[in-house]
Length: 230
Ligand SMILES: C[S@@+](CC[C@H](N)C(=O)[O-])C[C@H]1O[C@@H](n2cnc3c(N)ncnc32)[C@H](O)[C@@H]1O
Image (cartoon, rainbow, N blue to C red):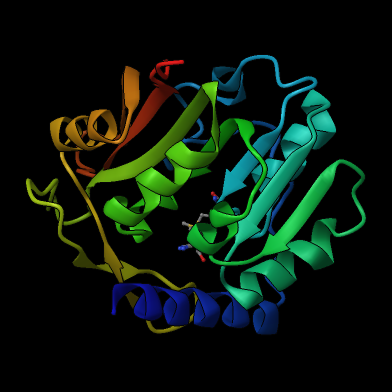
């Protein structure tokens, strides 16, 4: 199953970097694509007093950045035990940051409602038909959702026009690449899914690689919960 393969890959990824002692610098802005250009943390607006969730938070660098530099209080959920371990080692004592080791869907089933949910390159690893209703159920009626996803990969492949996972290469510095299963969907398909699960799409940012020769491209979706009938 895709979720098991992805969990195994991200667990191997985290283990590799723990063993290697990889040092990742603290983030001073959110990078929604893969390059420090384009929109950053300001996309999220004023986070003070809001309940915020980072979904698929990895080693927690962006959640820690928002706590440290934007005074936010952030919950960060990550399914890989080794990625979670890296987050705890690095940021485990930071007041205002709660690091949660869980599958995002399982966590969302019992979570309190959030004002803001954001996700940087994690939505593509989770079946949207499971993920989007789970997010919709815990996003407050006037809540906002922001997520970035792969659109076209390094081979120029994608996006796909059906809701199906495809294999992608997960590069591993100093190791053999891993294989993951990803939902790399076209923007219209994402929008149809989002609308179908009760969201409205405010904006889709195109995040292209800076070099013309690099086909990698990502999309940032800025979304809100459609007002529910009262
Ligand atoms: C590309 S990494 C991004 C990490 C982090 N958002 C960042 O940008 O530094 C994707 C992360 O999503 C996590 N992930 C994938 N599926 C998940 C799920 N079902 N629940 C929680 N986390 C998940 C992976 O384990 C991995 O750490």
